[in-house]
Image (cartoon, rainbow over all chains, first blue to last red; front, top):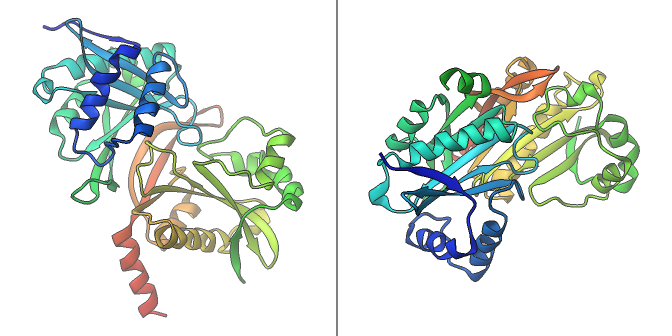
Amino acid sequence: MRNVSLRPLLPGDLEALWGARMRSDEPWADPSEAARRKLRDRIANSGRVSHGELLLGIVSDGRLAGEIQARQPEMGLPPGVFEIGIEIFDPEERGSGIGRRALGLFLAHLFDEEHAHRVQLTTDVDNAAMRRVAEHLGFELEGTLHGFMPTKNGPRDYVMYGITRGAWEAVR
Amino acid sequence: MTVTLRRYRPEDYGIVRRWIDDPLITGGFPTAAPLHADEEVRAIVRDDRSPNHERFAVVVDGRIVGEAQVRHSPPVFPTGVFGLGIAIFDPADRGNGYGREAQRTLTDQLFIERAARRVQAETDPKNVAERRVLEAIGFTAEGVLRRYFEAEGDLGDLVMYAMTRYEWEEARKAWNSTG
């Protein structure tokens, strides 16, 4: 079993995060200099809630393997509600359990330290791996958001998963 | 009856100050903020734009009866996804169809002028009047987000309604064919 932990990102992590974005074929992979500057600013603020986001690095066996964020944009979500995004950089490492352990650690942090009362995540209806991880951790399927995410093949349906503080305390 | 939407103006200060923190309209509103200072209300009626949140006065026969809101904070709202909110201020003005007309107008504007792909509206599952309005416009309930916002000292659920561009186009065809 790999040792997985979370830590604030450091300036030297920029190339790993930038490279993962440039390899991604998602429409939000923006190669501009402005996007790179923005990523550098996000890394500088990593480890604390800043500009509606808490961003951390995922470390597996001493190596930066991915990133995880909790979003709470002003006027986007009410106080106490966070939305999680997670990315494992190397496609070969997806499904290896790193994401599941990172998500478990992150949930504990949000409920224990950031006063979350609800944590939600959305994922593509066909992302079976992500859905399994969410269900394993106690998230419940709440609905399908039709035409939610733009992709190069047109809009995709996303599923909404949520976990409440009560459910989290019960599964823990 | 003509219901129109417009940006706020400085002379709207009085009515916005009167209602913005009134429990009659903030109760159940998902992003109920801390009480607004006078300076914040002045910024709202000066129409100082926040990039992710817009407010419009709902005007009936020259009189402001409520407020409509549009939210699109990325990345919680991906490109082309907008959130809609409505509040009719005075209970005496409710039940006249003002909210329905305002939300229909704003939905049309988002699809026509803002290249919306999806417009969503979240409401208290117990708010039967608003649910009926959303369904009449063509929104579909997609699910219940549990324990989402503070309501009456507890945490309330939210029902997610949405309309996709395709659904909106179909609904418009139906409205046009029935006149």
